[in-house]
Length: 339
Image (cartoon, rainbow, N blue to C red; front, side, top):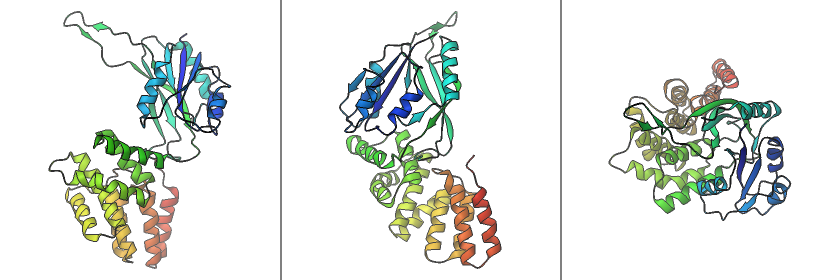
């Protein structure tokens, strides 16, 4: 049986930390808590479970804090936990079985991360596999009897363990500030963060968040060359930004670019629907809401291809006095599911 270090980074988690650590009792040989500046009772609560508590000066870098926490681990495997996660009893038992039976060559264990759509900011599905358990020391192996080479890809196992993600509130405001700090420091986001910033805006952003993000995404529109994915993303963001600014010319510019590509984005079609419903042209609005729901492709937030336009279609038909169509679309709205 292998041994486990639980590694966590925390800050002001007094409302959820006990719940998390109670659910992890008996699963690991050591618990390492790295505190990045709590001003509440987080460290006192942590002290009930472990004496391995470390302070780490927050430098606006989650990876730096994670790396520090991993550096303190001494067991065979490291379990990366967050304070707002919970393992129920069924999945605690699955974890214990895994601990007994995991093959030594496995280097990463993925677990199902569930409850994604509650307080979600970047994901369009309720459950996904995430790497959660990592072999602390990796043994490099040579393979092939001739033309030998070292195996570089880790050996990954997809377990049946389900982790409940149960935050008490959204982290969107914190994340938007982090995106802006990275832009200010480095001038650019990685392709991964570029897309995650856009998704978070369309899932959890308020008007001021879009306005703050506008210059960065506009800079991509002004480039001579962009990838197709970058272009689709900035078209969605800028279409909404210009609608929020009441700048019809700017909005239409990026809407038309998006549609001319041959496959419109649901987010862009929805924004056109919002524009026309805003000027009480309900008949025209129905065309674009319908396209968002049935003809276009979602780029950033699956709701823009589902329940959002369906609800607006019902509202448009209500305003047009077509109550039969209103009822039909309300039924579709009430039964829609992202699954």
